[in-house]
Image 1: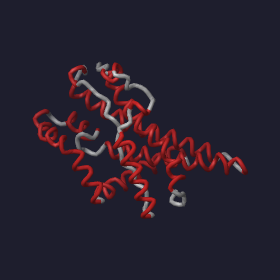
Image 2: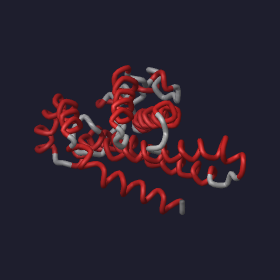
Image 3: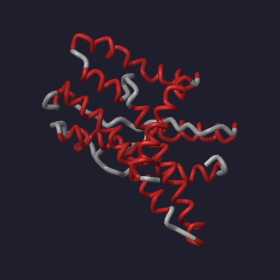
Image 4: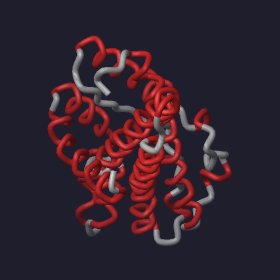
Length: 224
């Protein structure tokens, strides 16, 4: 997709990004509701309307800035962003420590499921031929590939064992209570650490091979 101009890249990536972050957050809220916490449901966050989940900085400013920077520099595209977290009331969960980890797992699991769905779109797009391929098949193909890339990236990013990312919460659910205190103390610095890793290039070095593994798995499963 490096041969697309900036506007074409934006058109191809916008829907996968919006769906990726929206369904990720809805999955958290849905799982919390299943496990006894209706907070997200009561606040109207169990909706696929992306407006309810958009964070002005994390969903709009940061991804668009990265898109512009990559387009100007001519480098490979690395999308990074976030949505408004779905609120979860820890005390409402039936087994809070275990259930919080399950709520955290639901988001990355939803991204894996969406990567597979976008892969199916790639498969459908490959069936177009002739003039249909030009006006419908090619755009669907690029959007499907973007959907696989975005959801693979979101899955891997959120599984990093750093609070407040999902991976950090999963780790806290797996560790004995005597060891979770030090991890919880990192949470207030988590986003700062993540941004430092991003700007230094270390985050990309960590994530690139893992994202490629997920993409390869999706492609292999669907025989793309």
